[in-house]
Image (tube, rainbow, N blue to C red; front, side, top):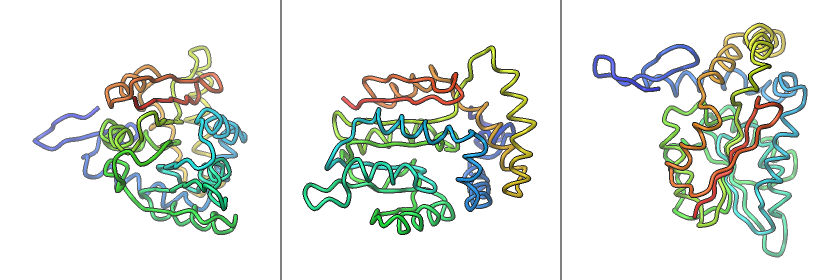
Length: 255
């Protein structure tokens, strides 16, 4: 939630309140710190479940040979690699396109290097999701996985994603969400007690993973995000709760 204090707009950074102009820098520092250990920590934090969540998102996307996909806040590029196989970026006939983007240069560098290691020629662009450098109605599918909650103006970013989609195109938002109520206490214990310790032991960065737990609690719940997507111009929005709501996949169609 944003508010005006002494004429300066503020927003949340985890549980802290910061100037809007400072949030992007602070988030950037987090991901610069964790970039090299990002995939290892994802495996540890989710017990490998993040791979299943992402494959489910690919299946729900409906993309096919020759489609154009934009991977926003794509980090280390695991979704871009999966999409490349679906749309046939290396095909000699009707090749598809996947563009990997991230606002953070450290994360984007990791993703670009892993694309090269996988033998994939996928464009990578450093850009802000709130000001996408792409023409209207360019992509068949846009995906943002575990990145929307870090954006300062989520509503602006969602409108930008809608703008660059072709009519009938799909936006997929894969993000941590509101867990099933009976599991809340157990999930809180894991998030605030164990998760920062994993960050300390594996990534040598306890504060960044404390921020992760806090940012999840500040992110809109399933129904609120659904409404935000409608307000951004998506005519049809559905969501799927995964792992008891630990994660939700929202799918919006541009009519």
